[in-house]
Structures are given as structure tokens and as C-alpha cells.
Image 1: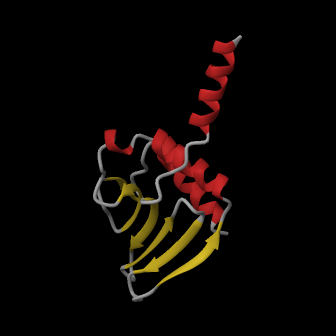
Image 2: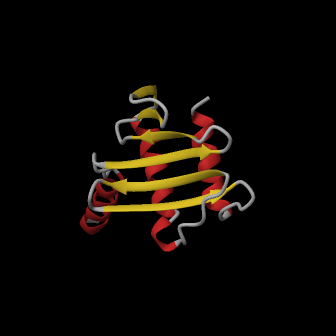
Image 3: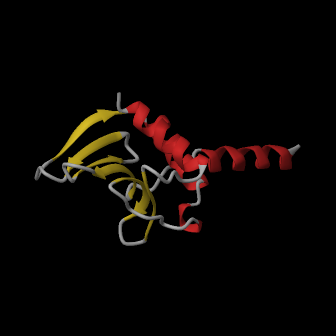
Length: 132
């Protein structure tokens, strides 16, 4: 009985693990006729920042719950971007990047005419959906 309680408590603590505050998810699209890049950066606290390459400022455009943000971090980790080829840029390019400052940065990019794996595309679409 004591082992069962210890096991359940350990599982609970592991599942409550927070996302390191230095981690970020960046979803971006850019190029095309204008050449402008739009980056959307999700921080562990739920803030979503927008940075356009033709503007010098970054602004908070939305805040989602920490639990929803944690869900996105779990999903991006499950994509194992470090195990996928980075991909090629094109006229209009999209990418998903998972990073933690100087520790690591994993990125998958694709052009409109070449879609990535279904899991990456689904993640990208789901992320873009929360911006609406």
C-alpha cells in the first residue's frame, strides 16, 4: 500500500513539472512578394508575442492559460524536431522552432509547395488557430 501511494505521488509530481522559463516555441511565416516575416513566440507563461521583420518592436498579442501553454510545449517536444531534417525555404516559407536560449534550438521549415510531416503541419495549424 505504501509503495502504491509513493508511486502515485511520484507520477503526480512528474506530471506537474513546469516548463523551463527560458524555453520558447516560435511559429513563423514569411517571404513571398513582400518579404516580410511574421514570428509568433509562445512563452511558458502563456504570452504570445508577435514580431514582424519590417517593424522594430515586439508586442504581446494574446495570453493563453499556463496549462494550455504547457500543452503546446508537450506537443512540440513530442514532435522531436531535433530528429527531423530542417527542410528548405521557398518563396513563402513556414517554420516551427523549439528553443531554450543557448542550450538548444530545433527548427523545421517548409515552403508552400512542400509540406512537412503531418504532425508538424497539424501542430502549426493548431498554433495558428489560437491566434484568431
